[in-house]
Structures are given as C-alpha cells and as structure tokens.
Image (cartoon, rainbow over all chains, first blue to last red; front, side):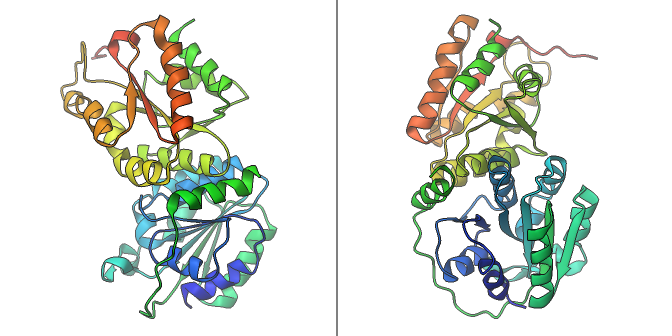
Length: 186
Length: 170
C-alpha cells in the first residue's frame, strides 16, 4: 500500500482530532490530502515526532491524537516507545509508515530492511496494543479498532514508495503552530 | 524559602502544570516536590531531546511545560532547541543543573558544561544563573515570563554557588 492511501483513510475518520506528521514524505502527503488547522507538520528535529505527540496526548486527554512516524525517524528515538508505554496515554495512536529506507536522502536501506521489527520493539517496550498492516483494508481495520478502544496504540504499516514527485507544502511553521494550538485553546 | 520551593511556586503561579525531565541530583530537589503535588504532571524521558519534544507537544496542545536536565545531557538537546523550540517559537523554561564548576570531581563534566552559556548565546536563547537564594524568585519568575512573552525557550542555570557541589561518593 501507499502512504497516501493510508493518510486518506485516516483523514476520512477525523473531525478536530490532531494529526502530527513526521518530517519529509508524511508531512508532504498529509498536506496534499488537504490542509487543516489540526494538522501539525514537522520539518526537523528528526525522531521527535512521537515525543511531540505524547505531549499533545497528555495535554489534551479528551481527544484522540494521531501521529505519523517513519522507520528511519523512529529508529533515532526508540526510547520514546518506552516513555509512551510508561505514561500510557489511552488517546495516543502512533502510526509508523515503514518504507524500509531513508527516503529523503536517497533511499538508503534502514535497519527495518534487515529484520528489525519496530512493532516488536514497541511490544517489548510495554505498549500492549500493537497492530501490523500491509494493505489498506488491514490498516483501516487496525485504525478503527484504535479509534474505538483505549490505547496507546502502535500501528506498524508496511508501505511502498512510487517515487512520484511531491509538491512542497506552503506552510509557515510558526503560523502552523499557532493555528494548531488554537484548535485546543479556542 | 528553599530555592527549590521558589521554583515550584513560580511554576504554579505561571500555570506551568507539566514538567519533563531526565534526572539529575540538583533538579531532583524541585522535581520530587512537583511529583508529590497533584497539581503537576511530571514526565521522565529516556533522553534529553525527547524531553524537549514532549514539552513542545504540551505547549502545542495549549498547555505549558518546563524541562529539566543536567549539563551533561544538554548536548543531546541542541537539534531540538534549534529546529523545534526556536524554529516553531515554542516557549519552554529550561532548568539546567550545572556540573563542571566549583569542586567538580569528574573531569569529563567540565568540557560538557563550560560551553553551555556560549552555545545558548549562539542559539539566541537567553539564560540566567541566580547565585543567591534571595534572588531565585526574581530570576525564575522573570525567566518564565520572558519565555512566554517572547515565545522562546529561556534557560535557568543552577551552579554550585547556589546549589552546592556534588561530592564524590567513592
């Protein structure tokens, strides 16, 4: 399946729930699916997107919080899985688009290409609700369960890259943050 | 009032209800009081940059979080301070327990602590170091207010002059 197919499935299911996107293709594809104030796009601080989402989930316990991570990024911050397990916010849904490569830097294979199982790491870190999907149908099933049932959830998704060109989002980061924050503070 | 109680009351006064941290013995004097107080949520991280990320997320969702670390872990935060807090203009009060100064016994603490003020200057992050207990409130209140007014991180550095030096245990 493709990342953008998964994003389309997620976006169909949200109202004002926040979606926090990892730098690179997750941010590009989320923006391309339609900009919304409750989208937070990241552009740097690689690895920290799940940490940011943990903070959002803890400060806004009454909303489901979705974060879209990548395999190369999560490999930089595996400790985040242990921290999420320790805090165990029931409203956090951590999705990892795993293309087995550092896509933005030329497609170098990441450690998931040689057998590292990020879902296994999540489980061993103490996150009990772990799902894996390789098709849109399986992803939608996991997502619906994660929306219905308390988490934290970790959804590990195997994706393919098509190499199609992407439009760079027209986002000013400060403005993005202010709009995103207003969806919580009114 | 002990300097650590001043910090707790200043956080309360400014509605900074979350704290993220990687522990150190100096900041633990504050954090242990926050943990014992049900008004505060205290979140330990596995690494300093992660603690910065969590604090950023709390602010992004409408809250306020302070971040606590030791000088030896400061280097782990630089990318997050630059690309996340400064890039997005996210205010986070940073409390750094400074090793490597008076009576330091661990020589490798010295080169990691000494450049911190210069690194903060280079990042355009303002920093303050109260040296006497009677000036802690002025500095901590002021740093927190400055952080939220400027929408930038502001650092408070705890040196041995105020908090005492850690002694070698063996």
